[in-house]
Length: 118
Image 1: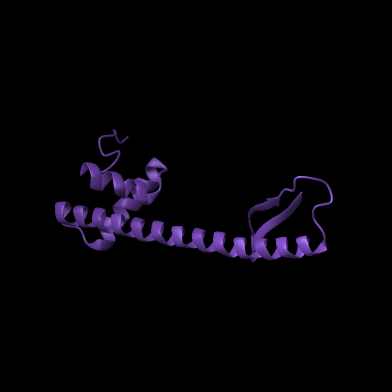
Image 2: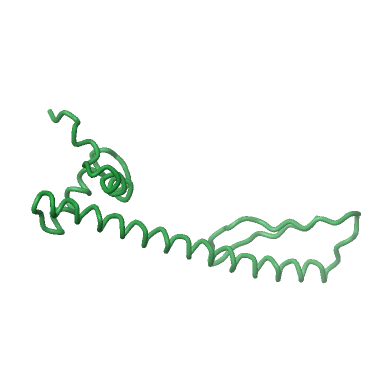
């Protein structure tokens, strides 16, 4: 068995393990080739993670914009005021801002708005 760590710029992404049917199957050349495969796999995994993070960020930005628009129209708020409402609710409920915005766009109600305030 040969094991290689997958990493890019200090980020540990996982491991690549190669198995053989019997002992002594891997030589120095096998280790060099395995290291090369691990390097390519690490770059591919890092690229896929980055793309997913970008897609998630764009999706979050869109839903936050939609929620702001709902608040702006419904309560005659500015964009900054609507964002402040979302941020306050996010903090009060200890939930991610994008999740609060998503719930608002789905239900058309500010999450936690029916909670009693002391």
